[in-house]
Image 1: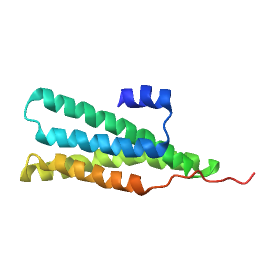
Image 2 (image 1 turned 90 degrees about the vertical axis):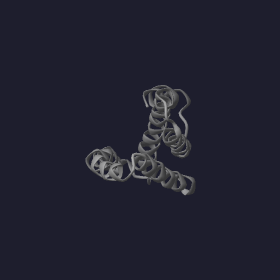
Image 3 (image 1 turned 180 degrees about the vertical axis):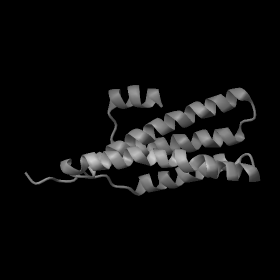
Image 4 (image 1 turned 135 degrees about the horizontal axis):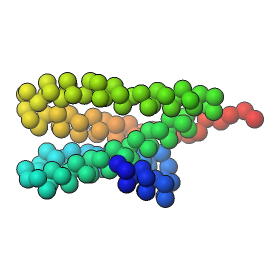
Length: 134
């Protein structure tokens, strides 16, 4: 996550749509690897890949959000987008624990599915900056 946001995004400055698409693809690959790994090195590599994908996704979401609103609305959009991960921290553990009681792999499969849905949405999304009168 730190490498994705602190190095890649800062150096290459990719467009939001590319960050969203790449982040979703990398995240899904990481979760697939996590589901298929049974040894510690594979699990660690999968978690690193998931973190990298999450870093790309987070940068893409923040960038896309700021492009789709007027300058006057950017503070509110940034606040909403910054609050959204807190909802994940609030609801994620209880939902994952419930899935975990059914099968140890279900929480990871659910995350892969959710990132896949986000990835499909990112492929369909057209991010155009809002034109401001001026």
